[in-house]
Image 1 (cartoon, one colour):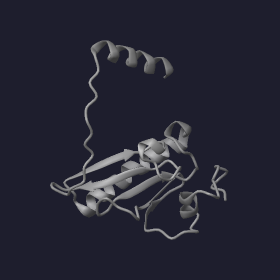
Image 2 (cartoon, rainbow, N blue to C red):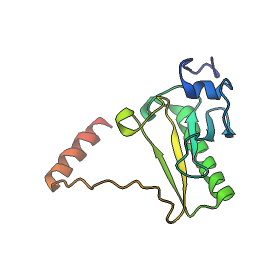
Image 3 (tube, rainbow, N blue to C red):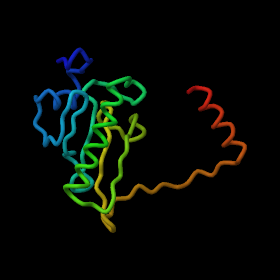
Image 4 (spheres, rainbow, N blue to C red):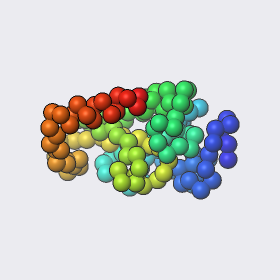
Length: 144
């Protein structure tokens, strides 16, 4: 499979959905991105937005592929808001198996939210000493 010279994995479920080999409830498609309803939604309208190029993480995207994904994410989120009129949205990316990424193809979740919907993203807060904030800040900034 090939989308304009971009790499695609024949073993990837999401690449096969993009290629039309596996049916999905599509909501958006352009040159760089594809969006469809999650088949295991945590809320009505839970939508996945992904790049057409097969990458597992955000840092692998560059140039137009990255800006195209960001634009599609913004456009689809606006569409979900307009169509379903939720009280709010969660927009997030699980990157890596330990972070909850089930399909190893980068994708963003758009989850419509309503007060009292039962969807929870609560975790304990990690307590860091001020010195540790400085160390972590320095480590990260040196790699950017």
